[in-house]
Image (tube, rainbow, N blue to C red):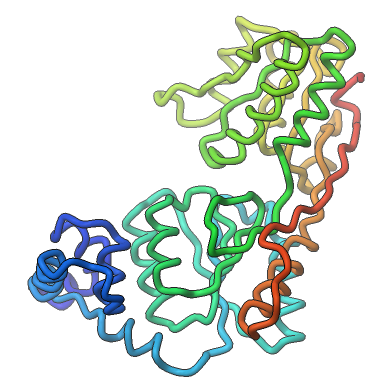
Length: 335
């Protein structure tokens, strides 16, 4: 095996070769004693065969603290998380922690390398803003017993903390207002980059419909053959018109505005357009798009403060920290 090939060997490679889960490999690496000898032998054989070097991981974890926090963010979210990062960095400076940034895409191979890099760098903790992180990937990080804080959406991980906004409740309250007025022709457009948040949003909308004795069936999926939202929406609005169109990101909401206009649908006279996430894009388009104002800076600052408490052994009274939001009505809605 060449040196270049060896560099590409990750914990994923070992798991696939041994036919076990990522968490099982991490337990073997950490010598946790929770793995059957037969399984342990298979993992160790895979490590030898592939030339993986877990010892660097184990040694790194045994050394003293590095005062380094790993921040994991998706590259597709930079437009929306600038203030989050600013809040996080400001608190990190106060407590003299260094931040290492790890960006992710939809590539599982890239994520495997990121997990390896985080562990090998001996980061004291991990802060994650990442919708695409799978349960198995989270399980691996948690198995190394590194403190973790998730930003932006609540997770079910019992060993980590969450600093989040309740999008389900936000959309429940918004849609409830429309339903109280007798407006029920509402759709939410799929966002492939934010599947977890979209799921939360649908949950909130569905709850509002159920309380009004109705069933929500307005989730509009974008077929795989479409490479972008604009292409799909332009065709979609040539055949459909709705009272309310909700999108996850304001960039997608702009696509809704433009494709509605191109198909003779007036906003907001014929259709209300709403974006869940707000950014500076909203101030650049006309009509300006109604959206939720999220306390982004506070999300980052609070996440870092919670992390410092976890690292210093201070009592963390709560596992979940829910921040408030404001719905800001602008020119893209008439209600």
